[in-house]
Amino acid sequence: MTQTAPRPQDLAATLPAAHDTVLILDFGSQVTQLIARRVREAGVYAVLKPFNTPLADLRALSPKAIILSGGPASVTEENSPRAPMEIFDMGVPVLGICYGLQTMCTQLGGRVAASDKREFGRAFIRTESAKLLAGMGDGAKAEVWMSHGDSVKDLPAGFKTIAASDSCPHAAVADEARGLYGVQFHPEVAHTPQGAQLLRNFVIDIAGCKADWSMAHFRDEIIEQLRAQVGTGRVLCGVSGGVDSTVVAALLHAAIGDQLTCVFVDTGLMRKNEAAEVVELFRDHFNIPLVHENAEDIFLDRLAGISDPEQKRKIIGKTFIDVFEGAKKKAGAADFLAQGTLYPDVIESVSFAGGPSVTIKSHHNVGGLPDDLQFKLVEPLRLLFKDEVRALGRALGVPEKFIGRHPFPGPGLAIRIPGEITREKLDTLRAADAIFIAELHDKKLYTETWQAFAVLLPVKTVGVMGDGRTYDHVLALRAVTSVDGMTADYAPLPHDFLGHVATRIVNEVRGINRVVYDITSKPPGTIEWE
Ligand code: XMP
Image 1 (cartoon, helix red, strand yellow):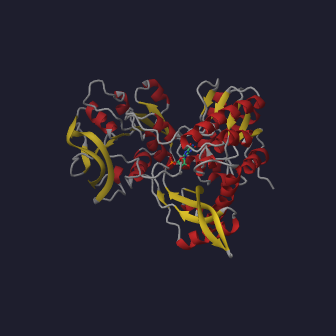
Image 2 (image 1 turned 60 degrees about the vertical axis):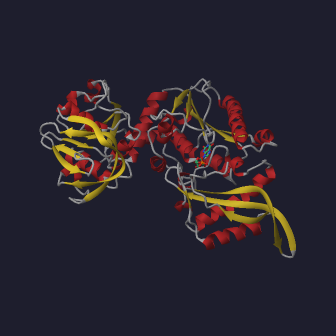
Image 3 (image 1 turned 90 degrees about the vertical axis):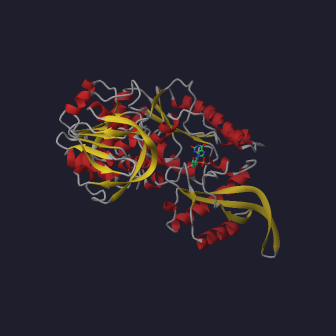
């Protein structure tokens, strides 16, 4: 029986309740959202606002705790950002992190200056007994992540030091009577192993926030925001079968029902059965109107004879837009275009480093469209990390098969066939890839890898099968472990597993007589071969 997704009217019954709010004032650190994320993980609602938000707007949030983020400026510079003075007297605990600590100390009468030694990376602090640091090594050494050029030299009146490292005498400070705290290190990053504990100590034990907030609340809140944003407008959402676009579509469906139309551009460069699964999920499971544009012929025509990886990517990107434009007409008029932009995409595109970066690969995202399209954008996942998107998808009833899926690149199998792309090669690759993936699922190795796939090489080698000579393609298997795809290691899959997969592929897939395993990490390699 087909399970049905939550309908808009069911969700409307669970409007966001009043939760204790933690206000995060953003001073521009690349990892500010991570603070919000850790607070959410502690079960508490977090709101992020720029440091210069008018005080009345901040008061209107009635925060139960305030966190000042890190940032790229130096408090020693003229006109560097400051927190509104009034927040220190609002009667709620304040925690300053890195720049947040430095501006707090400066504003309250302490002194900050450039350190003799800039400190970036792992450090160890000796902790005193303090509520903020409970569970962080308890007087012993705790590992933390530092990233600063300035440090606090003199504490404001009423403050004491509660942790120090060799090069940072005031690594954590507190004025417990006033509820003011500061840390020079970054508790929000994974490199501070007990950092999540510290943030939990602050929001729950010190500020007294109730841990009653969950992904289901977040879902309802985003749905409310989408309704407010879209009103009676119509929304078009490109879907690919990937987790991000699927969750965006499910959210919009829950928010605005049939004001949503999804468009699925089937490039013919997808994996075995993938297109059929996408159509089934949207039409049958979710009951969302779906325009399925089968564009295999156009894509393969335009790719014929092309071997250069960048040219392939550009052709696919351009063709995708052309086909999407056509599908858009079939979908009818729309006011908004939905996109599955995630927070890491946002930080990568707003670099504080500012330096020119080299294009390694021109990424093409399904649904990534040019500026001249006359749409307003809806990007409901802008503030989330991948694993939060997965949790949200579960809260929306998206089937596990789609939630746990490995990432799949927009240009699809085209960048897994070095050299020219033909329908025959695509079919060969699809068959081999399906065996590899099925075996990974079967042996419970799929979830151990970040991404796993097969690559069909434009190299033929000699083999022997039965009594005959074969002269067929080489297939490479690639499986990597990674946290975010930015760096990766090859997955140490067991030899007997790899041997078994190789045997199956050579026996069952015509056109392949040799299988190799790619053991390159990223860097220096990339995950995909092109
Ligand atoms: P690389 O090969 O650059 O890949 O190490 C890192 C991650 O990005 C995926 N990838 C893409 N995703 N459009 C996408 O949507 C693209 O053009 C693209 N190229 C690579 C890749 O699969 C891996 O997860």
